[in-house]
Length: 258
Length: 189
Image (cartoon, rainbow over all chains, first blue to last red; front, side):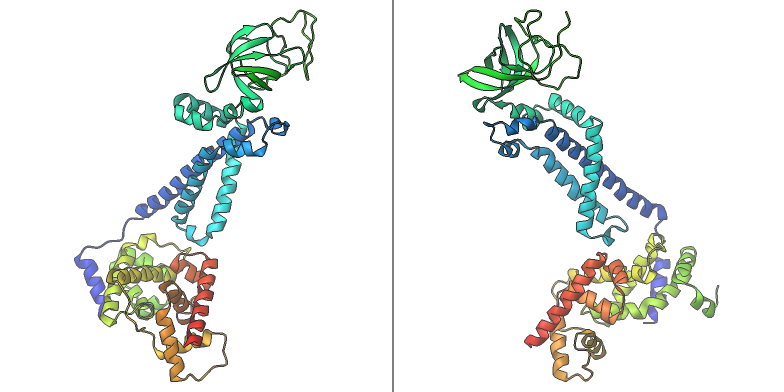
């Protein structure tokens, strides 16, 4: 085998073979890491959206007597974003394995650490409200996305079991007309026993959510009316037909100043 | 140019740096590793002498082209063994199915036996050698190569991890399972 040295050096000279420049290897490694970071970023966004969509649900209604409970969550869970989360998790795993030292770590360890990283970054995204912004943007611009991922709207589209939400389209005394999230029109009635959470006076285009009873084909009696978004302190409560000094039952409210 | 004695003192990393500037120094690397790599390829494949020399030439050319990819954080021997292993596997795949007989010699087989649980065995019967050869032939490549690296090349787990690019836990599992399969095959014989 003594010829091996001469033959190899001869081949190197003859074919003008030279070592590849270092920058090619550096670029390859940096590229792998960059792709990994991009995948982690998008995975974190998916996690942030999962946090936002899940925590934005009204979990207290799950304890209502006529609510099916946790089954509803499994029906409306953010599967879309959970799938995206899994895709980016596994992609980042494979790309990490391609980095220079990635092979040294067990698959299980990489997946656990990646998941924790996604959860932490996803929490930060949710904490800074970015999840809400992204969801809003996507809902406005991609109709198919909205159908799949407007979980809260789906949560409040169960009039048969007493949970209905939508936009006020006409005001009446002790009632209003409402367009629900499926586009159907409803006649909503309430009375002095209805619990109205503190909110601004009802106005057309207000979006509300109600717990009550379906009384007819498109009739709903509200036992509780809530604003779609939670309101801050200091907001006055007033409803149509209310006279000054009238004070219907209310769980938490502030007196109206004359 | 350095003298032979000066070269013997130089580490692989130092010779690599010299070889990047002058390919003549790369001959030192070839000289240092040609024999050990020859036996390594022979042990993990079924190729004859000429085929192995062809493979080794490909390996050394590849090593030379990728000299700038080598980093001190890795043992040079692990790095060159990795390239050799990958090139051998590529050749095995190119040529399709394996023949039935192994290229391991009797002293290699003796090392395998000594590595087993029954370490008191010192004298081997021809039949036992034959059983072991058959058992090794049947071993899937992934077990065979780690057993060769561990017991014949005498690499530690860290080195094997760097050569086959798998985590240490996986290396330990492969060795454990490979030994168990060998023992079961030999008991069956």
